[in-house]
Amino acid sequence: MSILVENAETLAVDVSCSSDTLSVTLSDGRVVSVPMVWFPRLADASPRERSDWELIGGGIGIHWEGIDEDISVASLLRPENFMRLPDGALGPTGRAGRPKARTGRQRVSRG
Image (tube, rainbow, N blue to C red; front, side, top):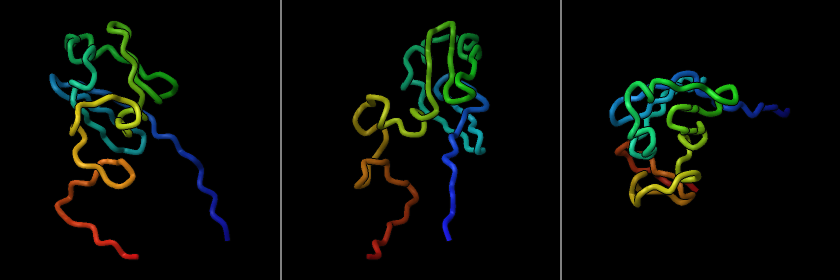
């Protein structure tokens, strides 16, 4: 028996900004929050400019017209693939180059 799985793209549905955090609510219910310093134009914008956003591409990204800033959902979910971040900004990485989960538990290899 085979199972067909559609490639469902996660989309932004809502955006909010605090003085130090950009938070994006995704179509699957997750909320992704990242430091505002990752986006200098957004960090330097006024609260009014930050609140003047629109979804682009049906939610694949967010656009701020007044400050000419575009941020893709993909870059928020996998910043190591899209942005040049300061060393250590994402914490320790695993074998695949992805950030390690910070759960306080150790993984046991079963092989």
